[in-house]
Image 1: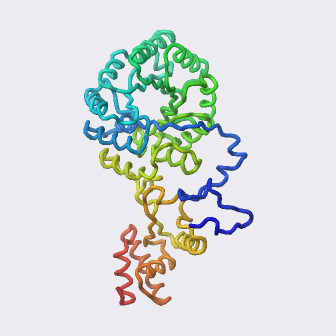
Image 2: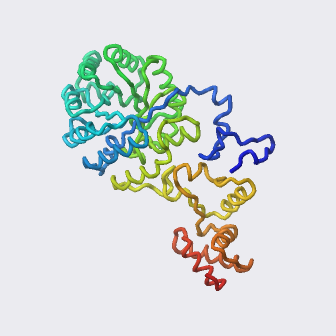
Length: 423
């Protein structure tokens, strides 16, 4: 594709920021008035929780061998923080011990309650750091955890942090259920006191029940960066209202430094921010380098799906098996004209299939038209009259309506042979 050869129309240009081998995306994402409203950190950290929170998907259970294998694969594609499991769980302790001998580049984090024994077990099994987590909802703090007051609550967090500090562990302190608090001063007070008394490498806020809308996320991220500007901030979110992608992107463009996410959106209830989605959004929609090899996202997604036994919808963003199949006659017609006249291979796709090591495919079905049949005839090296093309289209539509799935090439060849007598 020679971009220089593409004409300028109505003063519309195809610039590198939004038109590249990755895809042809929204130019307004890069408009100065839009960019001026963003506060993007220099580096975005991908903190993958597939092996911990992903395993909390009802019915999912990873073996030690499976966790070790997936951790290696996630490390290979450049994910810097991997939440492996719980130091308090025997199976996970064995996983940490095995991984600690493998010299991976990623930090291996143990999800740890604010219990001193949990921290000691994480240290003993060789974890590189802690995802030190506790609810910050005062109703949970009092009536579930049993703390008499906020001071006692903070003291317990600090005790656990001090043990980890002495052992030289990385600490990500995350107070979950952040967004069901109405008292911002309470949230501020807990985070400020904890980070003042112990060394914390990353702090996290969690939309645990997926209830914040994007402007609320922006508001909360800005508050956290105002209160504690010198410690990287991560965002954790669940997809109960389908908002994780929008909220994760809003968090990062509002100043959050890290995103906690799971492949295929695995996790409690409706799942987590999807790793493959947030990486693609950052890389392709915003031009932000995550340090992750996004070409491998589809492959990793398939591995996670096979091992977790949780299928991925064929229409799932980024990794769905059917997202690069085009059937609609008008879509195929436009795509072919853009390719023939401008050399654009993916003009009717939001991103290039090649960006994810995949291929575009034109398939037959009820929506097919003449453009599809003519394209396939040329591909097969066959010829047909205009009347025969019409007959083939009708046959393809009829067959598609009956089988209710895309017609593959061998089926189309049979239809062509029936009508033209040529194979």
